[in-house]
Image (cartoon, rainbow, N blue to C red):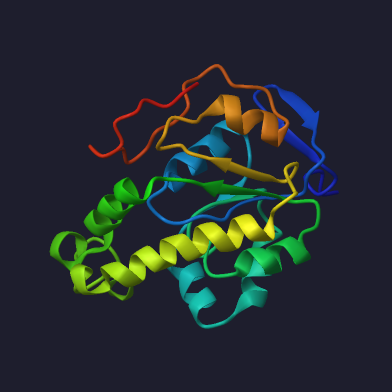
Length: 206
């Protein structure tokens, strides 16, 4: 019997009921997705983040593969789970799920995005299809994408406060914001803050 599908999860030495099905991160890259994934692990959730095979299947249009894969996990972050308008399909396929939008100010996000995806800085460290060859030429489009993502997700989940959370890991949000939303106890360890850059100067709140 799949106890996770019935709403049970294990956190530390305790087993608790939860009212929700799954939790999906639905924001943008470079907003603290790796930190969120680590937080999922600490809380005891089976989570699925980015990997090249899943991303390739998404880009090929194989949504059925993603939906079947999602049945095996509790929590999700990064690409392809936050890509495009996949959140609408996930919302329909997995009712009673929760969704997290990781917020970040435009200036800090843009600098981090450039460092990670620009051909001038990271070309050898990420798959070639994700590299932005001429960042300055694409900058206006990237900014437009940032605003579109903010607006589209917030509009879709408006008036759904019980299953939609906006948090800023880069801005310092941590367990105090995440745990009540996920109906779990705050663990006795600091909130993870992975891949921290110089542009992320604030310390995470507990």
